[in-house]
Image (tube, rainbow, N blue to C red):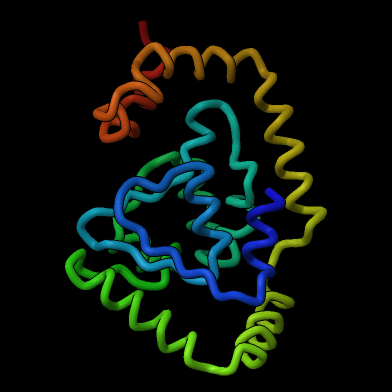
Length: 188
């Protein structure tokens, strides 16, 4: 958690170039970045924790509502589904979704443009935006504490064991089937 807070508060601009699957703590990491740009064809973002009997603990429940609004944040968090690049852009989860072939060039050009400006002006502007848009340290601490408590719940432990048996952290295809696996998790 401290890493995410330091990233967000750093005077250096952080830009996430998203290509692939970004869920859970990975999603919370990119949410801590200043800007997020995604491949239209090759991005899946989500907060699957509720489907496992947990809730996001790394800032997802604190950062998403500021970006996407309360209703969409609840859809993302409670639905435990994946969102493609276009939907993520429409919701505000990412700044833009671009064709995969254009993603790298766009992000690199934006980073070079920003880097050409005065560092003090960048840091001051970022600090002012942060002041009105970041969750408090107390709120982030409460989320991680609640997440750690949820890890001890027996139902959560059962769901995690069921996921491990089905291939979590061992089967690459498992990642592609994630939302469907949640639907049938405790069957059998």
